[in-house]
Image (tube, rainbow over all chains, first blue to last red; front, side, top):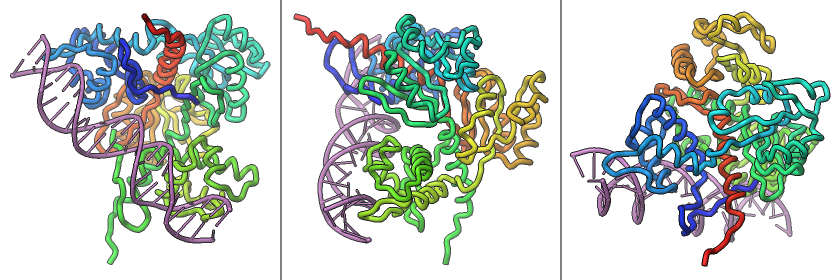
Length: 229
Length: 229
DNA sequence: CTCTGTGAAGCTTTTCACAGCT
DNA sequence: AGCTGTGAAAAGCTTCACAGAG
């Protein structure tokens, strides 16, 4: 898991945006799209921040890493800012992804409506189970794992999604890396080891619920704050 | 979105574990389970940290917020530590959750194998579409939205999962809150507003891929680092 | 000697508050 | 006057390095 960092390079365009900011830029993009749909042409940091669910100062600081795209005394041009963020995020092109594992989760991801409007295209599906190979899911024919290399090369895919059970995750990651994938989104409840230069992000569905359960427990158990004599 | 914080209370048991630590405790729990399955009875912070994919110092610091459960010169008793973390996380009980929206994602979540072993039980499914109401998914009959209050009260559910399209998210959140839910996991690509005292966590599938795409873009574009004359 | 538990240092992220542009 | 862009302060998180228990 390599997360490239270079806090602030002093060359032409400002480079090296903090991770926390990168994670929020897609949120701003969505907020700007919502405003654009409502016909809003221009907005102040406060309005955009509200749409995005962040504090206005944080929003301005985040945007300042990209450049000075606002107008003092006025605010931001919705369309212009939208384009600038999209460009910075690499969203002026579409990104093809391959999903490995077409069980319930993999199938749900293949059908997910939210991807296409965010520059993500599910380009290929792969599964190890011969009974699933050849079936069609969301208009895509499922390929066998051993064709991964060919698919990735032919379609120039650089992002892979692991949607298999935890036990298979490491082997799938190895195959993805071998096939030339350099970014992996891992939904399997397992750590995967990858060589330098390959990024991995992990989404763990149980962990999110476990964190909520923790807070839930504290809400109910800490209510009677009795001081003992 | 209320995230309760109280950095360090000086009462009996150490209270107020940092958010970052809470988010990692389930990872340690999984690592400990893996070690227990391999028959390992005791382990040092280094081994456990490796299993969990973190730095040993961070692991020890995290555990120190719970208490002193290790033995100097030796390490941690796997079973004992597992129990202590589980207790802290509220995992000595099972948590019932209700999933709203049984489209592809909701169905996948209902069938997700990883929940049961982590103390999460999908207790009810709800959908607004009358064609889905009454169908059975993963052995659970889908109920109509207007029964949410009754279901939540009867089964004493405190955690709700939103797996609807973005447009429906706010209304679903309102209904969940009205029904008495105090923790929400939101998979819909939209912000939801909730009153104080209700926790919301958000998982956004596109955003994770957009972040990977950003790093991917920089990998390829910054390769030829040519200095101009 | 080994490995934990933890102050202290270092780094990142957030928030404040205001100078400066329009 | 209004709102951005940003240094500087504050808060939070990670890592170091070592005292101290076994």
